Amino acid sequence: MDVGQMQRQWIDYTKSLFLEGFLDGQFLQLQQLQDENNPDFVVEVVSLFFEDSERLLKDLTFALNQNGVDFKKVDAHVHQLKGSSSSIGAQRVKNACIAFRNFCEEQNTDACLRCLQQVKQEYCLVKNKLETLFGLEQQIVAAGGSIPTELSFSG
Amino acid sequence: MDSNTVVSWPRMSENIDGFGLSPKKSDEVHVLAVDDSLVDRKVIEHLLKVLACKVTAVDSGLRALQLLGLLDDQKIPSETNDFVGLKVDLIITDYCMPGMTGYELLKKIKESSTFKETPVVIMSSENVLPRIDRCLEEGAEDFIVKPVKLSDVKRLKDYMTTKEVRGESQGREGIHKRKLLDTSDVSSSSSPPSISSSSLPSAPSVIDSPTRRLKMASTD
Image 1 (cartoon, rainbow over the protein chains, first blue to last red):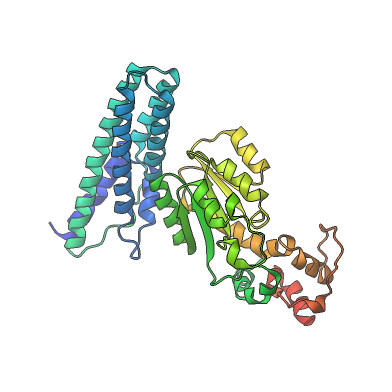
Image 2 (cartoon, rainbow over the protein chains, first blue to last red):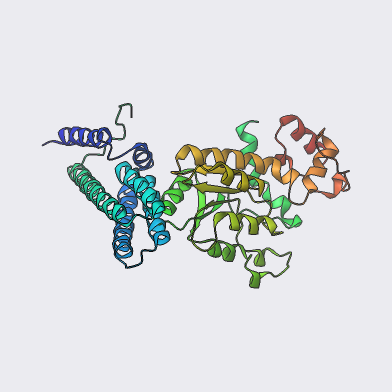
């Protein structure tokens, strides 16, 4: 595959992530902030998001499996996860968190556990997708090309 | 207001050293960003850097107060800049933080003598009107709903630089405001000019109109 093909593949893949709702405009914002001076910005922020999320998901699992669930704590964790997913444009994770918080308010443990599963699932999906995307980027750069800066489609 | 005026302001900073205003070491605007989220700190830091701001990012209100020299045990009344802490042009803080909220931080900043004029902007993922009102009432300059975008930060920078151009004249020591009164028709002020023009070094870039600038230059 030549660089041109790889770049087109990258564009198509990125577009699909937006169309399928995995990513939203905020991710575009981050991509637009990446330049020669900060060529790894998106990867760095997303890596932080991965670390943060994994910690939060672990904490959530722990908190929801206690005998007396502290819903305030659970809600605080979900709020954090919602925030960071929103900041990187991980739309489906964010939406799952919003639903999750509603059940925290209701103090419904079962529903919360289901939400947690949902959030974990969305997180895994977006993680895989982003890792694939970054893999494509690495290939482009390794082949001497540059990552396209314009997706030219209305979001 | 033309961009020239805005750009020339920082270069005149050495003229105002004598008034206890911290000298800018460079043309850069220095922003203190406060957010408990690592991801958000990274994003806001980058957004600000893209706009050529110097950024210090901290993870709590307490840390911020410490940096600003506003923690209770740090309250050393002093005119010298050494004790005042960082020179900060804007403070941008998240609202929901464990420990001290952004609102509480805002209050502490506005209560301080050193930083009460510093614009404080609140960020929140929740678009809650009473919350926004409360912050604005407490003196917050602006309220940004997260996720923060470049356009949000750009807006802040624009109006903050503008405010600096006008703000020095209306704000901190009031000296430049009085200076303006000597030479122009600032109608909003009610305080009489008590410092004569000749005792002040000229700071023509404080004003934002070419006409006034000419007037200022002529009083040298």
